[in-house]
Amino acid sequence: MATPPAAGRELQVPVWDVVVRTFHWTVVTGCLLNLFILEDGGTAHEIVGYIVAGVLAIRLIWGFVGTRYARFADFVPTPRRLAGYLAALAQGREPRVIGHNPAGAVMMVALMILLAGVSLTGWMMGLDAFWGEEWLEELHEGIANAILVLAGLHAAAALFESWRHRENLVWSMVTGRKRA
Image (cartoon, rainbow, N blue to C red; front, side, top):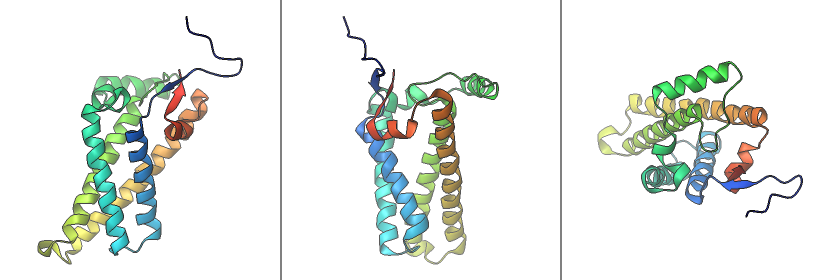
């Protein structure tokens, strides 16, 4: 028989494995570096872009073969499930979810698509066929700005959900654990 947690201590369960957490914080760091610190088009900017593309590729594979909460099959919602969750959220009655909630899952998929797009356009800008193409540079910059906007919404939603469900979701992405 399991021993209950000590008074004031809640039971914690593993949710975010090391691959998911490494992906998350590598992308956060890479985006901050490339959007705010490194020179656009410079060697360091390109290296960081390739690192982000690499961890994205690993995360996409991990979405099919990884641990329970990392698998796309576990969290990508159907339109009906998303609509039900959003209706409950609008009424202030959204359920607490151990892994990704349906809205968070849609945000994650959208961010991954944008990361793939910014990686692809960044790579294309280094090809002779597209060298100096203004439309491509504008597309790359537009996708990067969309990532910034969605990442801001993602962070705000994580803080909101942390407050609503009285748990620190940012810290859970550091430790990999959430309360049961």
